[in-house]
Length: 126
Image (cartoon, rainbow, N blue to C red):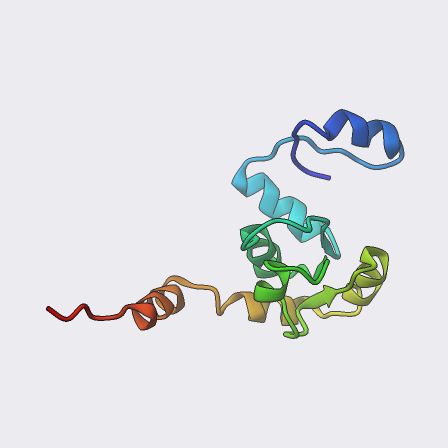
């Protein structure tokens, strides 16, 4: 587990066999992603989930709950697995090829974001 936060000490106690890596720089985090086989996103309340795109760009399939954020980013793309049972999602995500996750992440780019924004603009008539 990479990162920190107020729940860290409780998680260390609850999961003594887990490896806690602490805070990482962007470059270090990319290396951590490349060493993993699945990116587990346990949040039920995150909005967009930029970390999902980052992980997929490094070839990591995503395992997450089927809630806004993961539904928007992963959806039914085949780049990960969404399930109300996070363990089941993890096991299914292990079957996803890294190339599939990386290819799906490529659609989240500045030209696509700009086009989506421009399409939502509505002219104001005077």
